[in-house]
Amino acid sequence: MHHASTLVLPAGAPRPHRPLRERRGTRRLGAEDLGLGSRAQLLQLGLTDARLRRHAREGTLQRIAPGWYARPDAAAPAVRALAAGFRLTCLDAAEMHGLWVPHRPAHEEGDLHVYRFNAVADAPPGMRLHASRSRSWTEPDAVASLPLALEHAMQCLDGESAAVLLESALERRLLTVPEVEALLARAPIATRSRIGALSTASDSGSETRVVRWLRRRGFHVEQQVHLAGVGFLDVYVGGLFLEIDGRAHHEQEDAFLRDRRRDLRTVRYGLQILRLSDEQVWTRWEDTRRAILDALDEVGAFGRRKVDRLLDRPVPAPPRPTR
Image 1 (tube, rainbow, N blue to C red):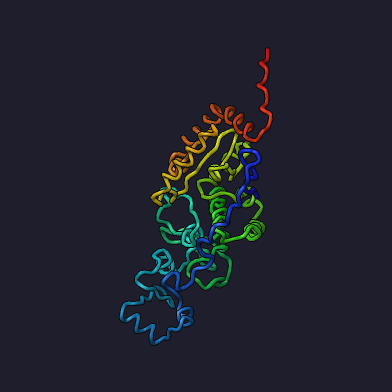
Image 2: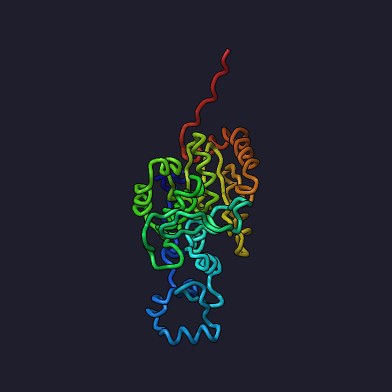
């Protein structure tokens, strides 16, 4: 696991405690969360068979599959999966649990990731079936629990997408580091190798993507570097700081102005900062990678000298030209 950096600028500046974020999301989605449930679940909530029949007649509950009932406002993906005899998992379950979910390829938009016990046949069109050798449902809910959804995701998705989900579960405090390590330990070696090292410091899936790419290219990456008077900066690599906006970064009205104030404060230190948007990381990724490498080539040496001075480290002498 990679963790947040201990780097503080300038040297000797106090590093404030980086508070844990509030838990965001769920580990399990029951009948009350989804607006639907099995007969057994609804009886546990205090309904009776007579009341179930009355609700069905009145239209306040709809029978969507044998033994399953849903309100009109029930979670549509879960209803669709249940009506076809499946239950939701992988990306779709992870999204419902509140994780940061990577962008899907255009040809997969609208598809549902589903599972069923003794699943041997192909899923109907629009559904991606996760095989299961179990002879019965291992969970009672219409949507896989977060650990089960992540187990399926690690088998189904590419390494980067699986890492985005796992790091999001850590960032949103839905799983602990030991729980994620246990999930990885149960996975096949090939799956663990495909996913590789994870980080506990990524604030979004966009940051996960950028950091993993940089580390695969051999760069030493520091995440969550603290700059006095500014706060924590997402990434430091090779003399360049990166600020990576998550998908919902600018939903708050003052987010843009707050970022501009932070940028102005960094100017006094002479630091080189490149700000990346969600669109640049996911829709224009090839162009963005080239832009990052160009920036490292063009300003990296200058940026490293600035950082070395802020850290009160000797600035290396330029190499002598070879003859």
